[in-house]
Length: 254
Image (cartoon, rainbow, N blue to C red; front, side, top):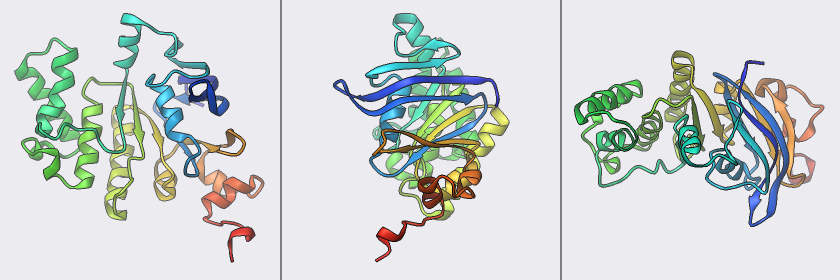
């Protein structure tokens, strides 16, 4: 395994002291495309929110370069947050601002760059996702796939080491989803970005993931981990095998 950039240790994820997922422990290697997967409602997005510090865990640790996101405060927490970028499922772009203005916003808020320098850098980042020609458009004028790419570009605005993507392929047609998969793989290979992706899209998982953990609602934990192609080919783990092979089992065939 590559050197870990993120270490999750005995994480109990939930709300108001009630755990949805219990005792999660896993490492994410630097430069990996790491996928958190599982059935609908199993807690994938909840775990992501805990990992980015949006929701405090019931207990446990989320370490980035050995520093605990859970207990970090003040300048230390700000520094840690600047090491990560997040693109949520709906993109979360400001509808009244152009794509370029959306890109420049975190740069002007968190750096000392001049407006001209921020604009130049923003256009370069948009070029990485093939959107520099659309910089003048509003988010509502873009297709669904273009909005996803714009959200990824904005998540890269501050040069984070880790990008968290929540259901990036949701709502996209198969061709657009495949283009997004290729973009994620290209960014990981060319820029060395670590990706943490929450999804249940099988084709995307098999196309891009270097490593995965699979969550299950009933056991409130990790029931499988490893490369997705290995999980798909291993009948020893019945739930993971049925999931990856789209086999609901005898109890659901009638």
